[in-house]
Image (tube, rainbow, N blue to C red):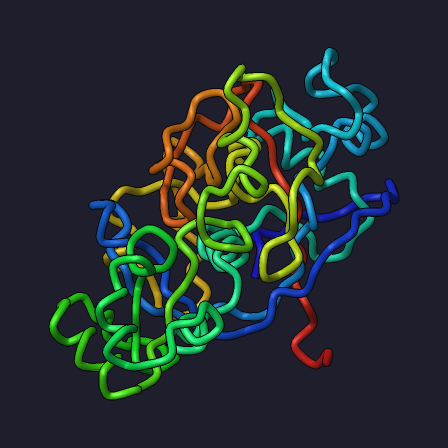
Length: 294
């Protein structure tokens, strides 16, 4: 569950979406500090958008960035500022999401690659095998043949082609936190923001598969975990919460003003000192869901 902080009396309407429990393939073979692995993440609630300047002002009494529009993500907010905001909220069991929760929420649900290809008008197994490069790596990644913890990530091209030619199920996850899994101009603010103006409104663009907006290229979002480069190699297979201590806190999602395309991938791990602030740092709130709820 999220990193929990004790709430006080301040009440604020903060729309949230349910992220269901289930397996997710965290990480990517592209990043040395995030080798891919399939883990289980329990259900939780995630803010539909990053916390806005208006919301931040209602709770803290001032904006993070005094020059920004009220509907933009609150920026110039340190990790400790984000924790202070959450501590004053009246949302039970609320906190910053863990790295694992953030990445699961960004990727959206697992996709059946055969169904995606069928919907795209690629009807035969042979054609699908020939078109694998159009889908794996740029739009989807971390292919597995079964949705369960510890499932083997299939990376061998011949094996992938064989699975597709045999019409077997191949599950994949979005590379980016956008509906299509790509950096289409109408989905990721960083992609269209050539003048480096921003960030855009927190609810700019379409929602991803879990109904969340702005997960890619809006602002870097603080997570609750301490950052440790080798953590993914030894982290638990269920609800990892990060190391018990460290010097830097994790950041996810990429920013409108300083990110390259690789930085925007759901698996990319960034970090900074908890006191650091700039115009590209924000956060969103997560909340635990009681285990007996439906």
